[in-house]
Length: 204
Image (cartoon, rainbow, N blue to C red; front, side, top):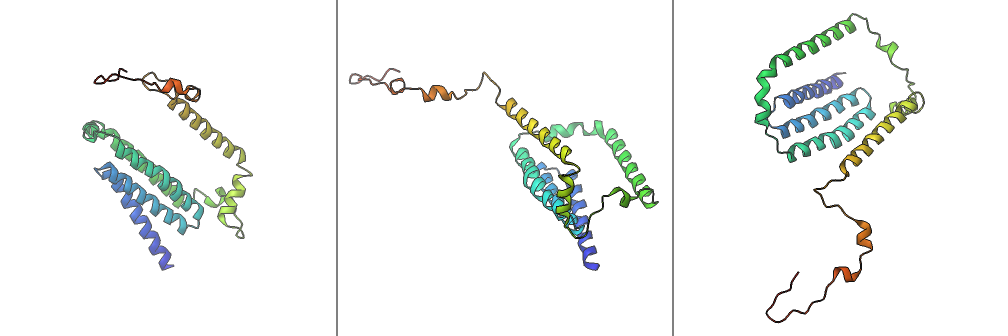
């Protein structure tokens, strides 16, 4: 029992510290790197809980795709972060109020859980011990929540089609490719034979 507790406090401590560094880091690239570190340690906590599927999803989706995308976007955008921080003092009271509200909600949730007002065993679906949790998630996902899963897929499909349509809309300041004109072009339309006199250039 000592070794799992040691790994728990190690992963939890690094996760909390990296989450704090995401907020306090002045360099946005460093913030994204600390965010990746927080995701990796959170996946370690999922492994300790026996949810290896969630740990792998966290690594593959969030670290391998979302966080790396954030990193490239932050590195490619020319953002004046000094100008963005200029209005920090103006919105500081609102931020402090929001932090206090979230802190109060967390304290009330922990107090209700400690008092026994929330029965977590009654809220969770029973999982047989003979099958792994990945198989249990798959059975539950493709039986009880099949229509919700398909609906989420349709929402993502519509979002992808909308992004493609908005990206490839007709724009007057961009030269687009006309495939039909390129295929039907004849050699006489692309090549012109000229015989200029000596000492005179070619007129275009």
